[in-house]
Length: 134
Image (cartoon, rainbow, N blue to C red; front, side):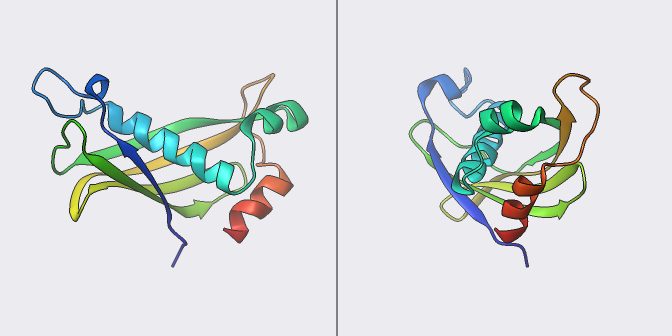
């Protein structure tokens, strides 16, 4: 069973739509922030990866299902786990919950690409080792 990383966000007015619920696309932003915080928790700085290795992470695919709405001032718990760590990609499973209610679930595939060519490249060894150890 993969380890689960958890991070929380509060819903602000700017996150909601005219109906007062979280705008659907904002879950992608929340999930992105959770992946960034996961990297920080692993002591992986994305700027350093770019500068030292010439590598960067890009989203290749995101599939998301919406289950229940979140509203202004809700605290959303974001969870992620690595489903598969490939040579040049990482497959994440992510969830957003408010209390016991599942709000959204997603599978997100992130690729590692070369900064200059934007072509796939291996995740740097030191970064992959930290991801495997998590």
